[in-house]
Image (tube, rainbow, N blue to C red):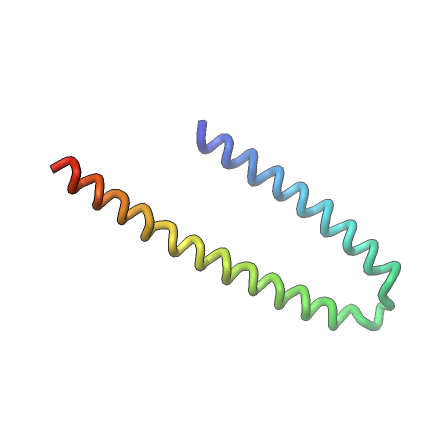
Length: 78
């Protein structure tokens, strides 16, 4: 059941991100000239890399938290 909720949540976020991306793309086409596409592309890639680095950092910290909890549970069980 937990996996189903996780998959549904991921799908909702995916669909929402597509809608947000399309809206921003249309808005940028209206306000920016096509000559600025390279700059906005580089800025977008930089922001995406920063976001992925932050997500990776959080994912790496999560197993440490669970391993500390499981060690404490093992000590309490003994």
